[in-house]
Length: 430
Image (tube, rainbow, N blue to C red):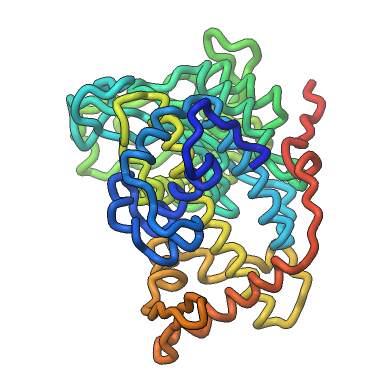
């Protein structure tokens, strides 16, 4: 509560329970505010919010209309604090992480503030918003991002986003690798990475670097090369690596122009500050492909749901949705950690031992395993009880997990938020 910046509007439920209501809606799997009508009388949801019946849908909608950029920034800070606490609870101490950055398109219909006609592959010519999202590869968490107007990102926007990453990283992280496609490459983007001490790999379609023919080397069926090149408008030169791929016969008739004047090969070029061999850099970048799956899950969670015509309200709702997405990620991390402890009997697991099958599942599958279980709700002795079927094999696992959560909640833990969050130290860059 102390980290949330309350708006001027004071709802009857209070700001904490209003945000908790949004998160409960998203946690269950309903992406739109209008879906509150289905859970207004749900006993479990009403019990969590300590209400007999939830307010009308319009109450939640009006509260969302009162939110602005201050609440959006506060939700990002809360997400960063919770990330540090979960990492501490799961004994995750990653010293290096890879952060993938990408955008998606939210197609809108009607007069939505900030919507533009831009790059919309599925609905060409239609207006949309263009949010940007950053994910941690190791834990698949959303670290930061923003709802944007439906235009291509400018170099200044990408640089500002990269400069803000350090605030949301736990203190164990000492080394960061930023990976992005050709939309994000630019002089100010690279400068921001160097200013923060982050390594980077960006795909390149803008800079015409030339490579020495004598420096090509072969790994498998592909050829690799690298060079130092200073693009126009950049302050300092940068290393570019390239992968040369032999074209197939059916590709030689393609009318699309290639980066180099040749009909025999196609090339993949990347800008980086890593000193690894060219094939190692490109192999590391290729692991970025999983970010498309994460964006797909985010879309399923509700980032495509545009609840308001007001851009600032949509900006805040985007952060609420992604906080709900992260809560599922953290639940899966804790469940995986509990599963590993119960199987091994250990109480101290290193970061390499944390991954578990449930951590790798999508959120949709996690809901089936941890939430959508058949149960019966009954009242007796002034208590509301939830009874799960013993014939469902998932029930036993859920009971063990809930018992583990109760045990951890009883443990006295002093959270040092000022130490856990925003303490990423920027190394000296020459």
